[in-house]
Length: 125
Image 1: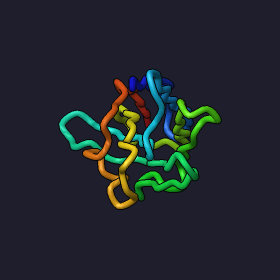
Image 2: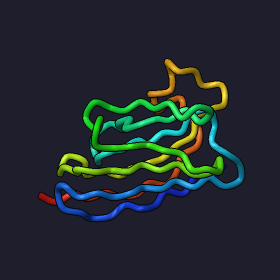
Image 3: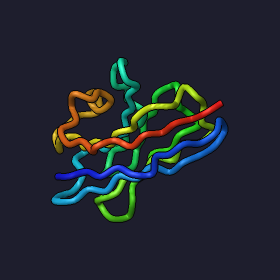
């Protein structure tokens, strides 16, 4: 499975973007997730969605501002990022878990096996 992330850009604080992640060569596993990483820091889980029922989970830092969703076809996941803050600046990655990944493991990056190349979001103050 190949994942292609897009939609990043430079915005002012308070602005919004819609990130997209398209899968090819297969479909997403049990969970799809968005993660972000600032150079020199650890990768952070932002949001995950269970493909079968659309249930979601968010990092506390983005709760109420970001929304993860899935496309009608089983090959696209979105992340609507709103009320952006300078501390949201990072490279955002989408990823797909295994089909066997369980709920308790779904928020951890090590359980995701397919990764997109990342899209940069820069928020200026």
